[in-house]
Image (cartoon, rainbow, N blue to C red):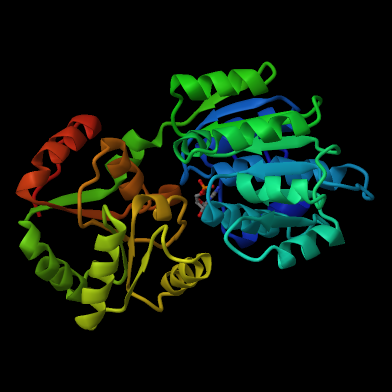
Length: 368
Ligand code: AMP
C-alpha cells in the first residue's frame, strides 16, 4: 500500500517524499480512508505508530481541497503535553509544507504574547493543551464555532494528568456538527465512556504495536545493585556501541543526579522533567536531537511523546512500577520499522517489577 493508493493528494505526497516516508504505517493505512470519508474515528494507538500523520494528513487534505478562502479555526487538536503539542504542530508544518495551511500551537508555561499574535494573524488548525486553550478562549482570542475537526489525542494520558474537567468544559464550546477523531493508547472504562459521549457512529481502528515492536528491539538486562548503577552507566556510555541514549529515571531528583554525575564523568548530558521550565526542557531536547549531548535523562511524564527518529538506545536506570511503561519506554527505539537497543538495570529491590514486566511482554529479558 502506498500513500497515493490511499488517495493522498500531490502536494502532501511531495512533502512525505521529502521526509522519506516510503509507505504508510498500519494506523495510517486504516485511519486515513476513514477520516477522508468523513467518519468519526476511535483510534487505539500509542505514540510511535505514526498516528499524528494519520490524522493530520486527511485534515490538511480537506482544508486544501475546500474553498481557498476558508476563514476561522477549522481543526482543533487537543493533546496533554507541550512537547506533544509542539511535535504535532511541527507535523502540520511538515506535511502541509506545499499547501497554504495556516496553523499554530498554544500551550501553558510560557508567555501568551507570541501565541495571541499568531492567533490574530488568522489560523485554520490549532494545536493546544487544555489549560491554555481555555485561558485564551476566556480572553476572547479563540473561537471554535467554525470547527470541522476535533482531535482528542492521548485521551488516557489526559485523564491521568487530570485534564478531564478541562475537556468537559471545552466540549460544549464545539459545534455539534463536526468530525471527531479520538485517540488513546489504552481504553479503560472511563475513556470508553468519554469516547461514547463525544463520537458519532465511530469506526474503530486498533493498533497494538507492543508485541511486534518489542520483538524488534534488542533487550538486555544487568543485575546490578543500586550503588553500582552509576559506574555501570558511565562504562556503558563510554563504550564504543552507544552514540546517544535516552535514560529513564523514576524520579525527578534521580534524573538530575544522573545528569550531574554523567557530566562530571565527561559525558555530555541533560535532564528533563516536570520541574524544569518549558524553555529548559525544549533546549535539552533539541540539543539531544542535534546530537550535541550524548545522554538525555528523563522521567516518564517528561519523556512522553519525545520523538527522536534516530534514537538507538534506551537505558532504564530504574525499572518502572507500571509494567506497560516499560513497553512505552523501549518502544521509542523501535520507531517506524527501525529496531533499537534497550538496556535495563535491575537491583534486588526491583525484582518484583522485573517479574511483572516479563509477565507482560511474555518473555524473559536476557542478561547482558
Ligand atoms: P507518531 O506516532 O505520530 O509520534 O510518529 C512516530 C514517528 O514516525 C515520527 O517520527 C514520524 O515522523 C514517523 N513516521 C510517521 N509516519 C511515517 C511513515 N509512513 N514512514 C516513516 N516514518 C513515519
